[in-house]
Amino acid sequence: AQEVIKLYVVLTMLEIFDKICGSLSSDCLETLAASCSMLLGGRSARGGRKYPAGKGGRADNVRVVVDFFVTLLVMCLHCLIIMLEAVAFNVVLNSASSSLLALLVSNNFAELKGTVFKNMNVTRLWTLSMQDIVEHFHISICLLFVLIENMLLTNAYLPSYKLAVQCGMVLGTEIVVDIMKHAFVGKFQNLKPGVYSEYLKDMCEKTVASSSINGYRIVKFNPLVPASILLRIAVPLVGRSWRNCASTLSMACFVACALCLWLVLFCLKLALGWSLQLIARRFLKYYSTTRKTKAKPWLLSSRKTEKVL
Image (cartoon, rainbow, N blue to C red; front, side, top):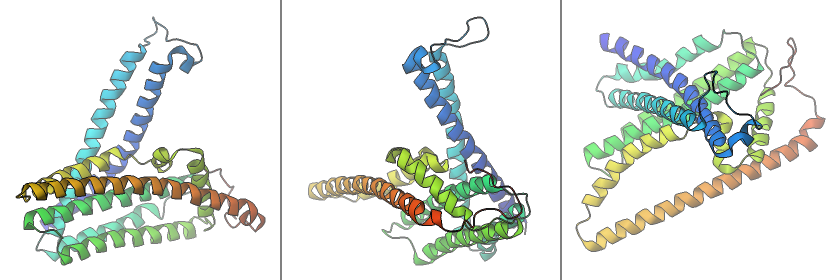
């Protein structure tokens, strides 16, 4: 019972700090980008104005340096949080005690208690939806960490079937709980299901207006932190495969396969960006020609409709 309580406290703390660091890291990156624009653009980036010398103003280069180290500190802290969460998942899923896995699955239902009965409006529901998208991606990265660590420990090229099923159960439970959470929020807060069409329209407009490399900014997602976790689990896996290459021919085949994999991932990224642009444009066309002429179920019946940012 003591280890179950400790694990519950640890998972809850990591989930809270993950959301805090995720929001803070996105703001820090935006601030760093603005500081770099000021440094490169000079006074033109500030409308011709300069910082006052005697009122605590800093030079542009000093501002960039300070923002860089603050962003680096926040990013390192966020990476540490995600790594600790992945390690906690690894301990739970590889534990012989079934109560720890049951706790990991049932811990998702605690979100219902902390979200359903809160005062929720359209803007807060939009923020909650974006947080759920980012959380699903972080959980997927942590579960991938567990699977690859299992492959490294067992010296196998595929994870065990039992562990893969458990990881799928954890991720599936998270998705089901989030669906229930949004359903209950809409029921108790009198928010109609059509509000998600407005969210989708807003996301499509931002997708069309931005380039494919900046699509992650729409959902306030920071890709650098999951990339560091993927790098942490990919380096040992690649190193093990390289050490298994006994001859020069096998090494050449390994390098060729690695280059082909990189090329496939690169093409997949281009295809994904192009597909998102195409889907966004088609939905906006459908919305302006068909959906806009129908009744608007997303209008709130008992509350004033708020503009989705």
